[in-house]
Length: 244
Image (cartoon, rainbow, N blue to C red; front, side, top):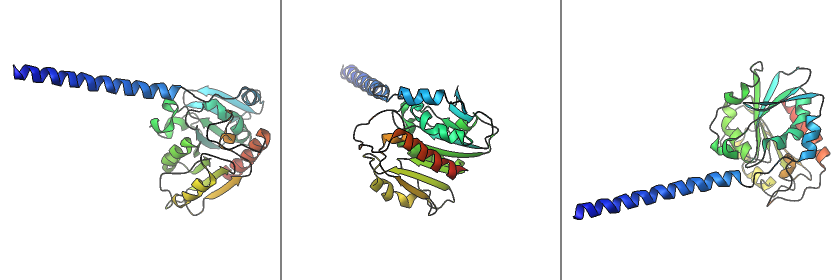
């Protein structure tokens, strides 16, 4: 009698734990899909109409390449947390115009730390390119640091590494925004020791966290004082010069 009662209790506990796990997983999945920051229509439309680049919605990601096909360098770019990957097309179109093939990834569940794919899952979009950089914005940059061992260069937008790359000879460009309220210049400076000594850190005056994409304002961020066009031009110049 006591054994049957014990089994009933254990069964109830087991079912309770299972239900709790299902609810937690359901909650996490729902959270990853709610509040995704969409790409702003005007800058995206402008990029889609750009005759100097080709944009392909490929299985590996959104691929931007120069129309003339003259590209020898690639950049895999990882979006920030819960940001629509299309929100980075406009700001990276100039990099593609200057001769770099850009693959903007689609992180699993809209969060880079859930995406366990290696760099080759994205570089396969342009197998003819041998030299690849990896980069990302915010949380996407943190993930890019983890993939940097397989890349020739690292580009960070409003981000910093949690992975120690200080002993490597990796080429690194880290762009910060003076008005960034999330990945503040101070936070980026505090993580400087995780990068190689040769890493180039540049602070863009007037840029906020959301200035590194085109998805509108973001909670907790500062107020940008730089225009969208000026931000795009600065990023194009800095990233293109660095990669080329």
